[in-house]
Image (tube, rainbow, N blue to C red):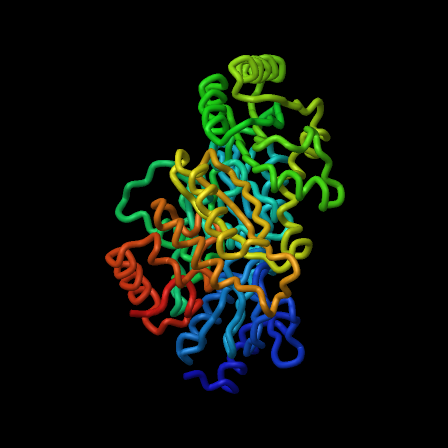
Length: 468
């Protein structure tokens, strides 16, 4: 166990005065991530500036058997970054900046504490696109995006965060620095170690730098909001758009009527481009390089969908500003934790053809147990991802039965052969249900990897799964 005075003395010697917080000097913002309630006071908060700092910090904590919880932008939704009693918080917020953009390779080397938005803007300024995008872009950090394998709005075209990571630098639990800042698309020299750390939620190592793959910057975007009669029509529209637009569909966001009504009536600044009352709404984006040709193809796609009865109404954004107003419909979900509190929020994935039936089964099960419940469904759908939130009017946080709602929902996810986490991770919140989506053999192998890389179990202990 940790010798606290000795450890704190070692940490103070590693860091500048602004890099270490202890006792009453610890800022409360380090005590929770976005979803979780305020956590226990950490033993200390360390804020390194360099990879060498991180290595020295972890080496010291390893010697003392001191648990460490890595933190990024604190936008996580699974409580993975909320500290437990006596843990050391390792914040990457001072390790930020774009180290290099390689114009020939189409890559970006970036520090882990850089916000996604800052990295996107740097790529755009250089004529490239960092394709991963999500609503928390202004706060979430690249290291956290990698550690959770973030998804977001553009997965249907560009893939998850792991598909953008070419190289990685990570510090292991004992302070060993593993530097593999590869820029090549093809590299079959042995095991692909970077993928061990992508999605590991800080349990196997602390990511300090990464090489990210960039895409050509689209010069033209077309955006439309469509109204539909059924979820089967939503799936048919997806296939129709993909065929008609030859793989240029960059986003396909489905919203059930309850979600659309909620955000257009309750969230300030969100307008309704189409009338309420339709069963489903879909936000569809095309990204291309020829504005006139893309606009014509997009219009033909929508006309074909209208003529065949797939959609019953549509609004096409006439400008970039109007497209942004359409996207506020989806980004409004960030207001739910405050606006619709308390609520149980979910991030699941399912076979695309099963999503509609799953949503119906879920609604029936929730209303049977809690007849006054309000439930909203929305999701990326094109990449199999469904989000939903459950709220019980008049029930305060102390009485809110979140664990019971979780149990009902995740049991149905299991019935439909889905995943309890599509993009947010497992953390603490979903740990009891990991077995709903992973076999005992898979869990055993995960524990073997954890034991090999972190034999003392100091990195994010108690997250994702417990030791055997």
